[in-house]
Length: 51
Picture 1 (cartoon, rainbow, N blue to C red):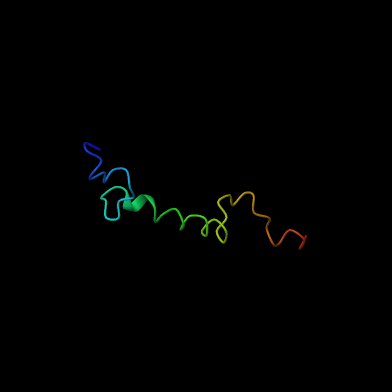
Picture 2 (cartoon, one colour):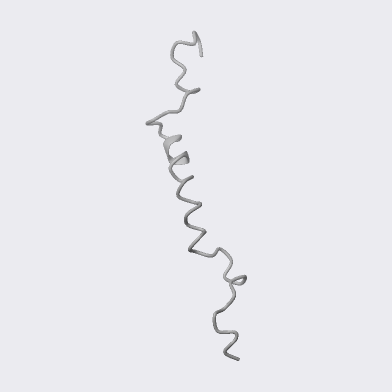
């Protein structure tokens, strides 16, 4: 940023100590909530018609 010659804070850091773990967890979160319900109280039990 000093001379616009080495702006490692502007581009996407490939091996940063705090920026790397911020990208990988993003694509891993959407596929998880699909098969795993977050609200067990909202899940319709499959044995209610047994009554």
